Image 1 (cartoon, rainbow, N blue to C red):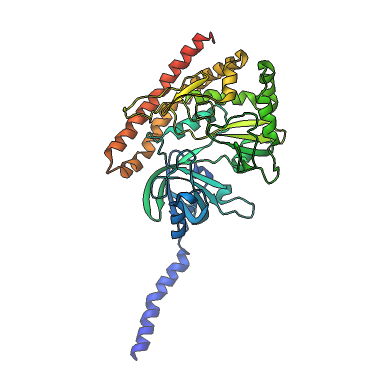
Image 2: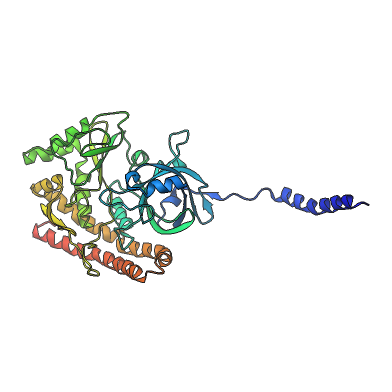
Length: 427
């Protein structure tokens, strides 16, 4: 037998069992697909692999193009389940503060649209927050939990350990974006517009100016179908009524008044100074339906639970007054608070309702064991933080201290609510 014949015979003999094994076992099993519940699961940390071409990296490091969407891919995985590689576009997120890609930025991500006009798992967007303004890393988890427990339409949250081009960038909080997908899930009626509040811009006459991308209120959704701000004009007109009784009655026409006042109460219980009811007049969405009625949606809750980043004093607390026309914030002296909130606390029927909602929020924090939930969340993210800050023990210690202080803040705030209710003789 020549050498080539021998080689062929040996090769066939070797491959035959391999081929047979392949027939018997079939192809390698693909990873189990993720479910939407995996995306916003506070008990697990997703791995998020973000791959960006060099042009996208350059754009996200250039302040002139921070907010320009650029292409990339994203793969999400946890417990053997995976999204597979998803085509996305991505930009940096922020308003009063932004960080370039080489630092610790936050991101807005859009999935590639499918035949239904939506992206992966029916989502349109993801928001990944770097939590640079939350040393505890658990504020957003705790705050959104309380909003949702009180029936306020608010985001869900999850966790992500982010890798950018293979480099571990640490822990991010994955916050559900209040977009058209969110609105369709939370509301039974049709959404006309979703307005995004701009810092220090209030519901004053004239602030219905601009188009979708300009003016005091930006249109995040709805402009293509309804390219005007007539609903916002109506809201501002009612909000500007000078007579308290007609103003309060008018709110029923243009807002879900009960939810609005309840949202004010939750924001204040949380010490959310960078909100509409705080001196920041910031971080909120206004959603209107086709009957021009608005619902308030909270946002940007990282600077809550009394953390005072304006000083170097470890463990000190910034207390947003539960009821006041104006307030300082950690970096500023006294500033006026949101117009609707101020009008509310100065008109007795509205103030009474606000105080009753504060009482309900305080009770809900106990009912859902908010402090226990936050403590459990801290345990979930601890392994990631331990790696992220392995060479920065001071920052890790700060996170631990702020977690303890934030959880203790709940009982402190409950005591303040109790005292305020006694002052106004609310039972």
